[in-house]
Image 1: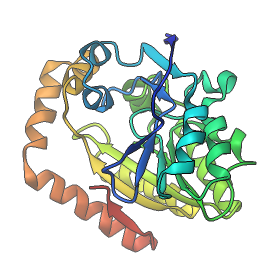
Image 2: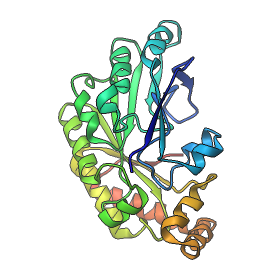
Image 3: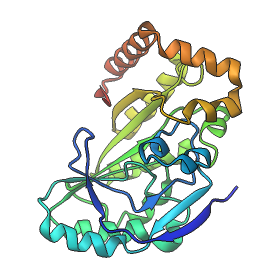
Image 4: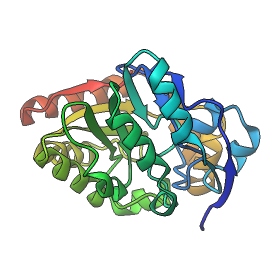
Amino acid sequence: MKARYHLMRCKSALSKSGLPGLDYALNPYRGCEHGCLYCYSPAILRDAELVERWGQDVWLKENVAEVLRAEVRRKRPGVVGVSTVCDPYQPIEKEVELTRRCLEVLRDSGFGVCIQTKSDLVLRDRDLIRGEKFEVGVTVTTLDADVVSKIEPRAPDPDARVQVLKEFKERNVETWLFLGPIIPGVNDSPEQIEEVLREAKSSGSYVMYDKLNVKTGVLERLERVFGAEEVAKIKKILQTPEWWRSVKKEIERKSKVLGLKCESAF
């Protein structure tokens, strides 16, 4: 199901980021067509309608590049996260190029750029994404196609995401793989985790990982696919510290064996 698109104008492009390693956040879109069940962005945006219709509506900040151009002239240089509450490479980005226009502004500024996406559309901008000021991160929750189709219904195939890491690494751009969120009984098996870690190794990327963050709307979306009984189990396990300690230990053990650098995202 394709999202409905809406135009909006923004007053600012860069907002202060509280995420590790990022000084600013830049989100050319509001909402995300990928519609991942586990995403807590709509809760962060504090929009009840967006929580209910997550994945069905996307707002395009039509003037974002122009606003950004003015802001980089007066703000203190730092690292910009592109994006933090939406994917910067929405399907509509292929046509409107909001993210590309922002990257053109940032390329010519004194700001560093950290891109996180699930889309291989980022490869379109390989002419801009080069050198030490850029890094590219790709989210890979699992390589299990059946699981991906359930929890990330309209996101690109994970094999295409891994290819993104390989291509940018070949271009000497720093790359990292985000393994997460890890959900009990969904993508937390040792086999699934090892598969993803091996892809990180083959692409020369380091790994960041995290567990499911239960914000408003997340469990309700999961229930629509997995059912109330299964989600009740997930919720119970998440409240058990032993589960996450065990998963972390497994990730760190396998990463050490593979010679991978890995760290918890938070």
